[in-house]
Length: 87
Image 1 (spheres, rainbow, N blue to C red):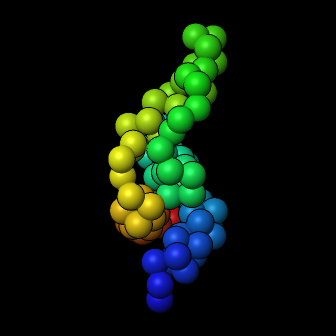
Image 2: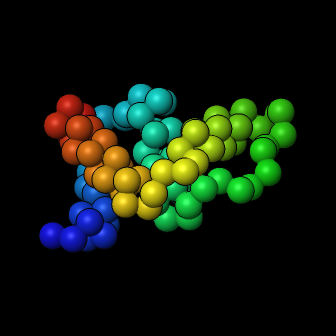
């Protein structure tokens, strides 16, 4: 199966989790997904009162420079790990 197909399947699979991942795992899922689909974060940083947005922005920004393929693979690996522990 191609990397793109695996990435698409991981997006479907992650929705079948029965337990909630940790905040750190959720931020990693978000960051890898955004890096894989949009590339480097070039958006402006959220304001100081948008705590959730700030954490998400920083998580995505931390993946800057990572290739689309690497981000897809990291996302797939993380979803596989979550499925093994939280399903």
